[in-house]
Image (cartoon, rainbow, N blue to C red):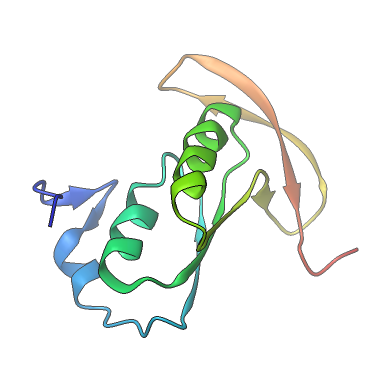
Length: 107
């Protein structure tokens, strides 16, 4: 496997390897950031993965991942209790973005 570090964005690689997901699984990753966890899971199990992140720079990375993996679907918004736009501090880039949150069950 190409991942040599002990962590993937705070999730231990051993934990992901122990999941034993069948290929027909669907996985939702909320706050997917750059998609590292999604990439590991697709390499290990080939599930259908839905990645959610409202930050434009993260969505850019996620769309690149989805271009090379048709089992990854990008949702460029956050999930929350209510619909709306909320300020979202981005400490890594010292910026503030206004991001959308949606409830997928609410139309």
